[in-house]
Image (cartoon, rainbow, N blue to C red; front, top):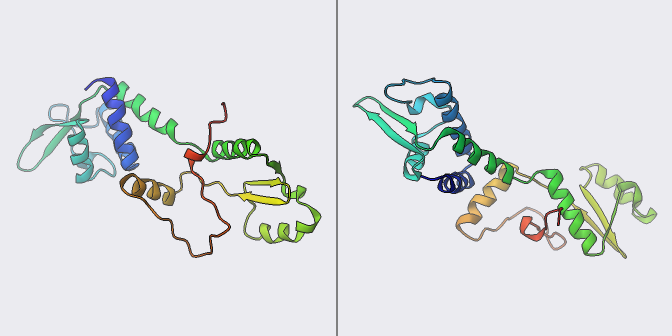
Length: 198
C-alpha cells in the first residue's frame, strides 16, 4: 500500500466513523512503545475502544493484517509504516474546520453579499428589546445588517449531531427536523462558504 493509498483509506474510514482515528492512534501507541507480544502481534483487547467492527474495517481496508491466529487468540499488526499513518491521521485532523474559521468564512460571505457585521451593542435602538431577549438564550456568533434586514448567524462546528448528519448524508439525502417553525431559518454548510484566504 503506497502513501497515497494510505492517506485515502484513512480519510475514508475516519469520515465514515471518527472512532477509527482514536483506534488507529491507539494501535500506533501500542506498536511504537512495544506494548504487545513482539512475536505474535497485538490483540483487539490491547487497543482501547477497539471493537470487532473496527478490526474487520481495518482488515478490509488493508491497514492491519492478521499475524497469528489460534483457537483462543487473534493477533494483528499495522501494514503501513507508522510515520506515514501518523501523517495521514494528522491530515484528517487538519481537514476539520473549527468554530472560529467557520465564523470568519461566514463573515466573509456576508460582506461579499453586502452585509455589515455589527456588534450586539450596535443594534439599532428600536431593536434594543430584542437585545435583552437574545441574551437570555445566548448571543449569536454573528449579527449582520443590510438595509432594514437583520441577520443572526449561529455557528456550530463538529458537535456530535453535526457528525451524525454528515455520516447520514454520505449515504442518502438527509432531512434535519427540528421542533420549531423554520420559515425564517436558513441552513448553510461549508459548501456555501469560501476559505478566508481567497
